[in-house]
Every structure is written in C-alpha cells, then in structure tokens.
Image (cartoon, rainbow, N blue to C red):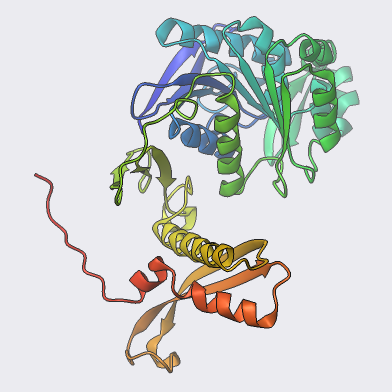
Length: 407
C-alpha cells in the first residue's frame, strides 16, 4: 500500500512531519490519528493500526506533534492546547488536499486530545479512543516527583521512557484548565472507547468515566491482556479490525458496502511488495486484504504475520473447521476448538518415523484443545478427523508448484 510523507504548518508556525497511509484504490474514508504522549507518528501502535486500516480501504493521517519525531519546534513549548490545535490544523490540511477526516482516533493522551478536538472538526462522524485518560492532567503522574520543581523553576528536564524532555510551567497550567468531560458530554458523534483492563499506565477507570459521560451512540471494547502501548502486533491489528467494523455503522467504508457474491471455485491470492520496508507485503484474497512482514529480529518491522505464520494459520483454521463440520454432523457436544501451532526445524535422525535420515526437517507441532462435554471416544474420533483436514493432507502429500514469469 502506498504512503505519502509530507509536512504541514502547525499552530506554532512550525512544519509538522506527517504520513498518510493510503489503500491501493480510492479511499473509502479518511481517518486522523493522534499518537501517545512523547511518542511520535511512527510508534508501533500508530503504524500498525494505520497499515491495517489502510488494508481495509481507510486512509490514515498521522503526524508528529511539535518537537517530536521529524517535526520542527521545541517540545518544551508545546501544550495540550497546542496539540489540540495541531489536530485541527491536520484536519484542515486533509480537507484542503484530500477530504476531511470522518474518523478520529487517539491513543493515550492523544485520545484525550482527539476528544477535545472533535467538536472543531465538523465532518468527523466517529471518534475512537485507545487507552485514553479521562483527564489530560493524568499525564503529569508520569513526572509527579518533579511537579514542585517545575512550578518553582519554570522549566525542568524529566526522563520519560528513558528519554529526556523539558516540561514547563505553562504545560501544567494549560492542562489543568481543560474540561474534557464537557467535551465528551457535548460530543454529538459516535464514540468507541477501547481500553485494556490490565493497563497499568492509564487505569481502566478512565475508560469508565469517558463511557459514562458520553451520550449514545457509544460502544466499549476491552483490549484484553494488552499493554498500554499495544506493543504486541496482534493487539494493534485487533484494535484496527474492531475500529474498521465499528465505523462502518457510521461512515461508508469498504466493509460497509455490500459486495457481490464471490465466484465459485478457488480464489486467486495476490501478494505484492509495498516498498515501505524491506519485507512488507500486501496480500489480497478476493475482497480481503492482509499485511505480511518479518519480525524485527529477521530484518522486518513486524507489521504483520510472517510467511510461516500464515502457513500455520491456514493449517490451524482448516483443522478447526473440519472438526466443527464433523461435530455438527454427528451432533457432538463440541463447544469450541482451539488449535495452537508452532513451526521448527529438527534433525532428520531425531525422527524415527521419517523416511529422510540426513539433514534437517520441518516440524509443525499442533496442539488441539476441545471444550465441551465430550467423552473419551468422541475426543479420540475428533483428533482423528483433525488429520483429515484438506490443508493437512496437502502439506503431507506430494506438492507440485509451477512457477512462470508474468507476461
């Protein structure tokens, strides 16, 4: 998927660095993303969510606030009010060059800023907060031991996430003046609140306050087991999937348009480089789009599952589906199937039943958990059925791959 990098003028007349993540075709909608406090537009959560939404037809604009990332200006001169003003400026830029954002998304303090800016962006119809504080002043807890010195000296350098930042008295004075609850109660836009119950940076009680204060339509989604920064790729992708599905109720997106019935027979799978990083790929399967990448340790950016991850996913999905078909046909009390898979390389000499005796072999470990009031015989039969799934048979049979150059 293409990405455009550019600059626009922020509230303090500084040039702010921005990235517009675009889908392959014409965007169905535009979204504006506000990153977390002292983070930046390229923080993993922002990038992964933007890429995942673009794969679903939603263009996403993210940018570095003043003094962060590649943006001009001094971070010490920024305030919560200036961040809100910069979000409005970003929306103005989209309105002038493309189309005003219909979707506003904010992460952590960026979520509070999005809530404060939403009333100043009339075209916005849907607002999403991720791990957002109900009071912007919550952020001062990150450097509470320096608050007295900041007020006395006017400016103090503090360490946040291992990096030095200068915080001024003006920042403290500005942030306590904001009445975010008033912005929330007068929002008049659809609101989705996303928060992890184990967030130890911004507690779940903040989500409760935001949700209770907002008027309908409003929704809450728990980001179970996720940390505050959504550092696990699957957490960010899950958040993007939920956002894309939810906004389709309020904004016309690719997921809200009724598509024609799929053609019979196997569908083509098209894989194309995005050129955004060394390994990043976009995978198209009919109306569906996925992102593939490699882990950071392998030279990628971990923006999506790797090739072997997709291979295991295909086997796991086929295993579960095959077991479900059999259980339903035989009226077995199978409530849920969970398949856990792992790929590894083993020495051929360690495999007694393998024909190959030298070198290394691929091994897939598959663990199947079955929930339900099943007896031993039923469980045994379902385990036998698992080995009969079509993908399992394909992987364990002779495979012929025909490769030719495109004309």
